[in-house]
Amino acid sequence: MSLAVIRHTAFTGKRIEKVAVCGGAGSFLTQLAIAQGAQAFVSADFRYHEFFEADGQLMIADIGHYESERFTSELLQEYLQKSFPGLPVLCTAHSTNPIRYYS
Image (cartoon, rainbow, N blue to C red; front, side, top):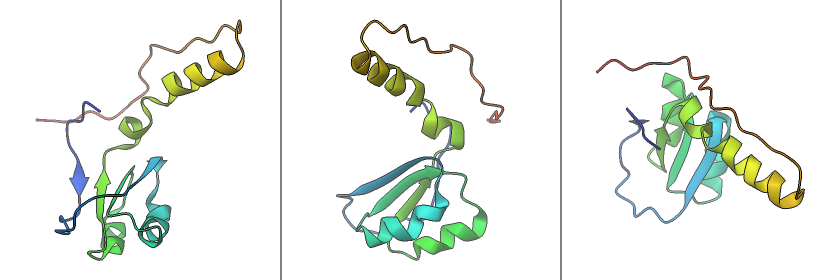
């Protein structure tokens, strides 16, 4: 994912066999990820208090909004090209991520 940083909760010590993933802001799905038996949840835009919802039941990894969606356009392009042969489908080369990281 070419990430500069990952914000995450403490590791639970459990073996990670199931990972829940939501592109964009997915904190509202934390309890569903737990209910589905995920040991890790990868998404974005968690606020400080939302990290507490993990409650040691799974690890939350906040990878950033743009970063969690950056491959969506290519996946959508591939899907549309396969579904509608001959339809010209173009992806933008313009990055719309307004966030920069200082290191």
